[in-house]
Image 1 (cartoon, helix red, strand yellow):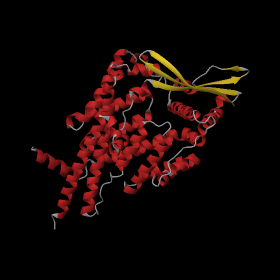
Image 2 (cartoon, one colour):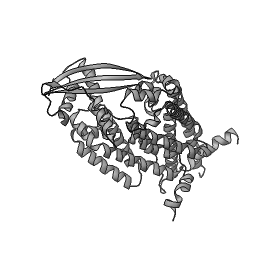
Image 3 (cartoon, chains in turn blue, green):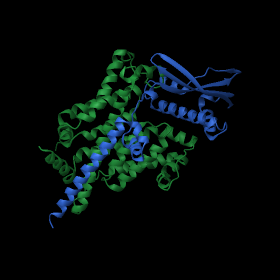
Length: 170
Length: 288
């Protein structure tokens, strides 16, 4: 039966074309109507893994979070400073590590913000405090105060919301 | 060409021979190199965090064993990164096969999970590309005709899905920007500057003017929308690939995201056809 492998290839080729057409059709639905992904599991899967993005969405580029830290040293509080942001701005080149550290600090602070509503001594809060205690910049501090803020901008107008602030002993 | 002839041509193209093996091989190798580079960049800082932060990882019947390396990384970060680097070097050195390609995908998934807190979209993109790359293994000469048929079709579908992944990503971002008043009015970059912490402080001030804001915004939107429509036509391919590379180098410069930019540049290389590769690199690399 020399024709058999040929038939198999033809069948597989047809099947592949049909699957690709369905794949493209579903993805285009998500591209045009991203909210449709809430209606079914298949569309949800496509939204999460196939139609990646959109990146740089409006909601994500108009607001940033900052962890302001001040330390109590020699009987005075220093001014609240976003040290990670300062490190990013201060680096002449190779800001990658500074940017990563900034993201990690904001991640810890954000988790602590969510956890604080339920439990002031949660693992998330302890991790944030542990991280700040481990930073050499605060070695000589007696106490540390943190303020987690959200800075939003529409055009030239800037709004600042304080998400939480508290002090702890170093 | 009638509709049925075109359909038959596409069907036969998918079923009869693997498409652009040189381009696909370069893509899969480059993907492994980018993952290795990113891991080496992140090794010191990730190790510090992994020891400071307890990573809550799922314990499902599938995710449990799959995420064992991530759990191990949480306890012994340096050992994990060393072993993963070693594996990537071996993966790059051996002939492509399903087993190591699947292991590579599992590693990228574990890296995605431990990078989650600070990861960018690039981690998910790398994971999805590594999923498709599992099937980009050419059939061996000794394979039976049936096995070779299945492998050829899987290879070609995976290659096309990689291209589509890139196209969908651009299309989703382009359509989203078109729906956003902030983007279409060209004020997005100004808002990023005002919000602080997004734009690279070293980005030149002369490029931060309303003229450049509008020009860069609309160039981005046009590229993201038109790429998916025109990349399938041969005459447009070199210009669009070059534009995408320049675009991602621009993002690297403006937002200081080297890993994301490198990954996207590797991803766009899959659109290069073998004949274009030969034309581009023959004088330097492929000459005998």
